[in-house]
Length: 351
Image 1 (cartoon, rainbow, N blue to C red):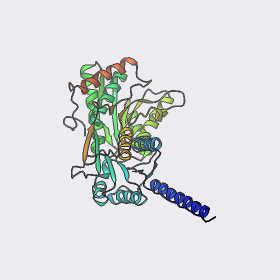
Image 2 (image 1 turned 120 degrees about the vertical axis):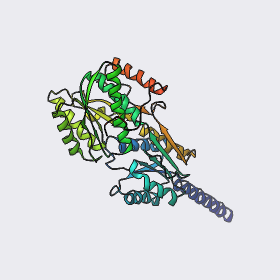
Image 3 (image 1 turned 90 degrees about the vertical axis):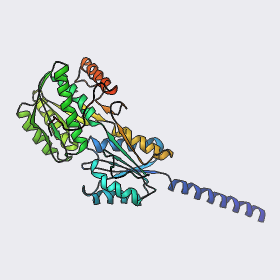
């Protein structure tokens, strides 16, 4: 009987040790976090694209993920949200947006075991060993959207509504203008650009303001508006949608992700002519997977664009003919091989 009790006790102790080990493993499993930039997680643009990349990585790897929307857009607000996630055990946090610069600069010094990515800034003040800074050549994506828009309209007028006047949004604007000019000079189009119709709204989250700005532009004769403004840009798309449903031949151009579905008019068609995209979902996914696999390489700035197949327009859009898509693809190849250089400054351009 004593021998039987001893065996049972050893089995019980072994099971207890195994269970404790399993629990320890679960508790140390990487948790993936994100703090939203100005705007909401469902902005159908920059925040949403980044979050979709994080979610995809978490789903494929069986990891826990969550996001926090900060109380405001100050450095303190962002840093508080990062700290809250850290305190909850999150050791990978994605920070999408230029406004995170100071918060990430401080967080990378506060938490040396936290893997951080900031999208849309190179952290000129210094990239920590635990941080990856990612920027895009948005000017190249804007250029291709400008070419596609010009080829679609042939004759007409275009405008631009940006969110905050920050580098990423400015580069979309400057690239778009250059793309329209290139099409006018090389591809037989005749598109007008009026400086008064190239504006920054000052917000990524004011849908009503976006619709108001679009109303003024369309009423003045603008045929297509490039909306690089997050949720504010959705307001532009909504106005284009309403007008097309009323029989007006106007368009919106989306940003960051393929926004064709945002312009869905309920009749199988969309008011979104094309979108100037950057692969925010892809880079968020790649870095999250690297963090989980132990291959995260902090301390570096990654800049990507057309050559890396990380910026451009959707390969297909029902509003563009195959001929237009082929022409844009040819222009993209000229950018890829260096025959076209798209400037990333405002020299000779609006704002």
